[in-house]
Amino acid sequence: MGPKRELVRVVRTPAGDVRVDTTGKVSGRGAYICPTADCAEIAVREGRLQHALDVPVPPAVVEELRAAVARRTHVPGKV
Image (cartoon, rainbow, N blue to C red; front, top):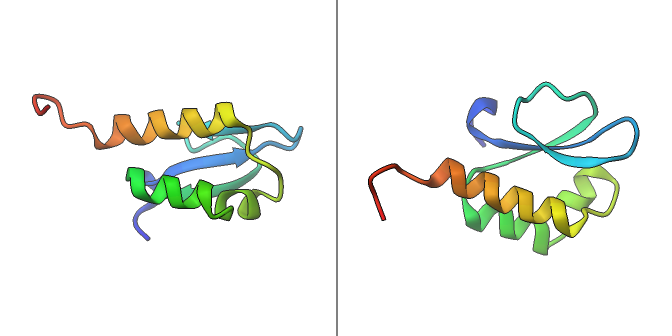
C-alpha cells in the first residue's frame, strides 16, 4: 500500500497486451506493485500479478517489471 505515484503499474490494455505503465495513464486493467524487488518477485512467483490482470504475464514483461523496480530503488551515488 502506498500512494499510486510511488508504485509500479502493470497494465493489460484493451487489446490484450500486458506492459509496464511508466506514465500511469495507459488505459486498461492495471495492477499496482510496491517498488521493491521482493514485492515484484512475490507478485510474479505467486501468480498475484497474473490473477489481477486475468491473463498470463509474458517473461519479457516480468523482466521489464524487474528493471522498473530496479530504477525506482536505485539511489544515485550509492553502490
